[in-house]
Length: 276
Image (cartoon, rainbow, N blue to C red; front, side):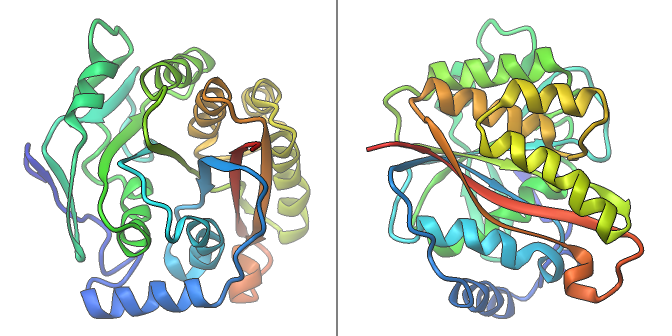
């Protein structure tokens, strides 16, 4: 990564580095899922961020929904897997690069969010090796014609930071043609049976649009989600933007893919919607 362009960090591991293979794989996954019938306008998506082999099909259920719907700006909220810091970081450079090309940063929205803010900053922190934003981008480049990106990493997923980010996004995105994506996986390294029970706790709270309940369950370890904070922030913002219900699209765990059920990672995707 340089200070201007965030280069791919997990191309060739989490997803193919070859542009043709990458496009073919994504289009095949999109073709393999049926578009979920929705009643309302999509305000936000919740999407997993593992390697495409494991969570790509679950992600495709979400991205299938926005084929043919063009957003000016797509906000992606990510946890920080590799670097701890206290606040919230929006990439300070000009673009993110993938094997499918460069995506320009929405510097106008970035400036609105960071202006006079003590928690949200423009920086490189959290963006270097972070995969949770990067793996979403090739899917978006396939299903969207052209868009600006606002990549946000939460360094500390405490309730104050998550609620603050959600409220600020709700303010700056009013009357904007924008989509919010929360990037998260669920529980890690439990048996399939235990993981399904644990994951259902988080999924139930999301399906009820209960972000306070989800935050509480995460803080008291009743549920697990590495991107639980981004989900809470996205739900807070979506509610401020008029969203009123959630549709769970798909859920599974890595054992469903590999056949190894002793230690798995859970995944789900969902849409947060505003009733018409």
